[in-house]
Length: 385
Image (cartoon, rainbow, N blue to C red):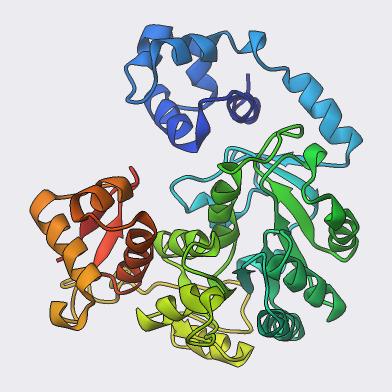
């Protein structure tokens, strides 16, 4: 068995996922070597039960990779794994990189150097739709690739506007390509592919989208892009999850301001209030990237970090951060809990602070933007100072 085959089998098996697969490969030496170990060896890994270890070694009883290859080939889909050279470099750098990418079309080469994720609410207002069209068209005219989720609302507008302006776009789905959702966007997906873009997913061909799979795909949307722009979003919008993933991945976060009393803009306004770059036109995004070390807007190879470290000051990553008294009462309450308790999950923070979970999620995103907290690979948050 090759590493490529191992990645595809692991991706087909339910209950694995990128994090467990990475732990298994690290212990065993390679993805293919996982299947050469005993169930007892595999069960020693944190998060791998005896039953899951047995399932991995008896994979033939649960999945049929050959049938998966046949379905993909009939559908014109290319399966790409981290063992393949064409696997996107940007995704290799995130800690929960997908085990497989199912690609219809081709991910534009420009994506690595000039790409921006554009996301937002499914219930777009007239203002949100207008801004989405304007920003996506401007990105296309500037030679940038747009990345979004092909959902109804802002996502659909972004993809269509990019194509109308002669640009390229990448759509990331929350389900398998043989269970396409939403059905009404099939013609749009076809146009994306025909115009040099791609429709991609990490999920097997016949996987049906669920309420859990859509948040999962958001990390791929942000991971493929240099930055994430939230165009219109409320406080409970899934677009804020994409922004959180972008922060975790060390990417830039941008937001379009909305009316102060519009609930559909509360999420964007909160991001801006806590430090996201305010965007009124695409030039604001270009200007923001121009100040990053190593950025050349005409280069195909961008170095986005200098040698001093992620925050530009390795000696004191907290330098320049706002004092506690400038933060909201909710922010301070969360920071106090993290100082007293150490790293905690979102649910634990909500329980200990007695704050509503949506308020906690919004505050955590804002505190990440301000670099006051950090999300660890296990999903917990820790105070930076």
